[in-house]
Image (cartoon, rainbow, N blue to C red; front, side, top):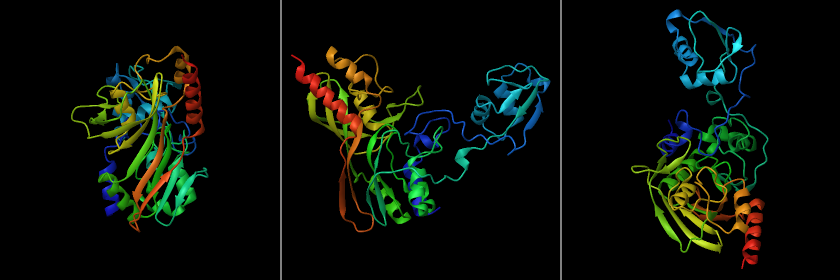
Length: 355
């Protein structure tokens, strides 16, 4: 393992993409039917359910018959129609009684396959021999993961610069959620990647976001609350005692009846950090349907506009770092995308008309 491999592993080893059964931090948990091997690519496995398995669930029987595969993998195969019971589709919870005929068509695991280069347009803000700074659009997943093995930024990077196949994670050192827009940096060499990861670990990279939060926030502040997996809802993060240290600074940019535009600056980079911290303050981000709990107080005239925004109103506006080769401090800025600008335009218009 190279030094870059080790330091990147140490930095990212606790991210959700490495935890079985947990969707990656920048994607939704969706089924993926595009990675099923065609029937003629592999041989079907045929079994007769032993009588001693009678009364077991189908997935339990499969786990005994195919111990080399994980239970979650087998359940995916059942859900995707790769398993038939007496020639018919089945469910994982279905009971078997012994004597049934099972046909299983093994499915390749995309995580075990080399990532493919794909011709996907990316908005490059800056590029030299060491780094690429990208303005990520809403909807683009950064790294392949469950349900998103293709069409990601990593696939686009491999097409843009094939040499990135030799760099761990194609040079990706930090992420933005699928529905968060804005700036992120990618390393083009092992040396650059190691330097950038060290800067992230030392908290010297400057990352500033614009966020529209529910509620009328009176003053800026600092949130210093640990973040980890939600104890019962494993696809969410939460403020958890004993979690990883997380610090967010926020300042008021513009105030409206029922919502506030904030500038948030990260000291740390935990999964969903700004979203979790603002929800912890009872000021969840507009459009963040994962972390909004119940109705949010706002003028009736404003309610529909805020409720209809389809994604978290969060944009990575500014990025600053020390260039990994020259040591020069560099900064980049990109305005909010059209959807957030239009949202703020409507909010301002409604606020102007309120008595």
